[in-house]
Image (cartoon, rainbow, N blue to C red; front, side):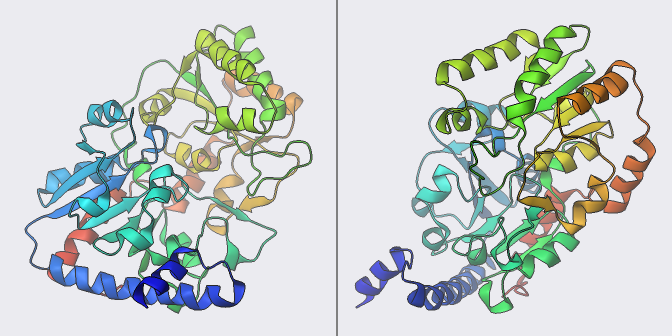
Length: 407
């Protein structure tokens, strides 16, 4: 009977009548698992932690990893795919390719519910022996304005609801996020400790060069097809920004595309694989490029950013330089309430003409009329200098002392 029940659960509960009871069963089961694991951790000398890689371009947990090492109370290791080891080892991380279920770990940290490793090692499976935590690789500053908040884009019931802890970028956003589900639909806590990617800007050191950054997102409407999150503008901005950069060699440029942009352009038929290769090579000839997650040094050495990436919109606040928000003509997303005041201070462009005018005023002429307004909004948003990595690690360390308030 146990085996039959397990098979029903692993079929992802496709029958609508059965789906909700099975979901509640999983939430309750995870709560019991976490209580058992916490009892074990009270006497542990160290916590064994595995970070499930979402790829080098999405690695945002460096400050968390470093705080764990510094404390001496954790043994962190990164579970990564073939070909990723050199990047993580270069960042000072130990790596493995073993299943987290075979590693005898205490804590598993996920960064992206759609990554290959997250799908290969689902929370329901890993939670049998480890506290599962979620630190999103992006700063989730947008939500779907045309859907119920209980079906928010950033929430997957069989992933987020089963976590022992979901760490979000602000306490106000965490309060909103908790309301996506009813209280009994959470297996653990939702906490607003800041975002670890912002910790990298506390050093205030970057590459010299005064780069202008172009960071295009991969998700955009094409041929009347609206993706689940339509925030990108590549159809009208991708070629225009490249041609502008080529026409202004006096400016230094950095191309920082979303890691999914290349494959997305081919999948939807916007470009052929050869055309995408040529586009990327043109950028490599025109300026610098960054394809991994070690980009904070580039951002701190920049003079401006042009982007439609929702995560960078808030992250670039830490740099304090001008940002042009490329706005799609059609979108199903909106700024979440916690980010709305900051979004209002960005410069915006909805077509090539507006974008070119901004580049002339801000990049070429060095004017920044909204600078003070933008910096005031960044301070009031209270997301800078939070030392999120340390706050997350301190919270995890408190579990050793018996803190079980989340259960």
